[in-house]
Length: 206
Image (cartoon, rainbow, N blue to C red; front, side, top):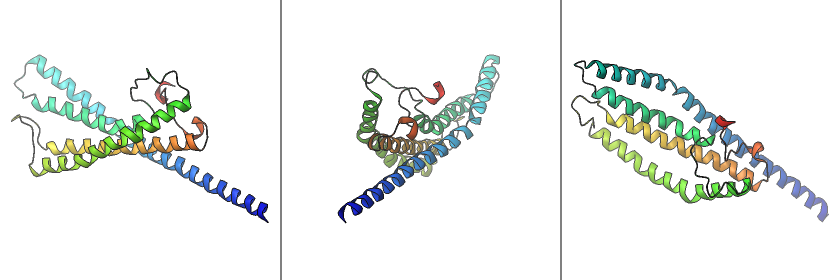
């Protein structure tokens, strides 16, 4: 009777592991899908940024009597918004710049271990601190009705700080997505294609 029960137990364990594996990948894919939609939806901000930048240059060249401070501040506000909405998604597709001097000769699995420990020891603790202190930073700006230091600058400085705070959460979600794929790759012994793990060249370079 021992052998049949052992076989049943192993089959149940395999089923549970399969369900967990599917859950890991499904969750990672779901997070990536959300980040992708947010990033691509915010792409129109690039057109607005280009338009404002062109206006700033034209007005400056023509030396028109127009205060350009709001144009200049709008430019860096839009830069911040685009950066915030894209930096999470970029990590899921491995589009961030990497310094691979020490890892370029390692095997793919070794690189995955480096990525895993980098997330656990550095990325997650850093993001915890950023998120923990980011919200009071936004609230304080809102309560003070913080605006530009320039008289002709933009008001509502808390808004762009809030956008950046949202960007921090998007990065945190991206880290979780990559972490789930790393777990599936390293502990379930699946291929990088099966788990959708990208370490090295990005999707955009393929």
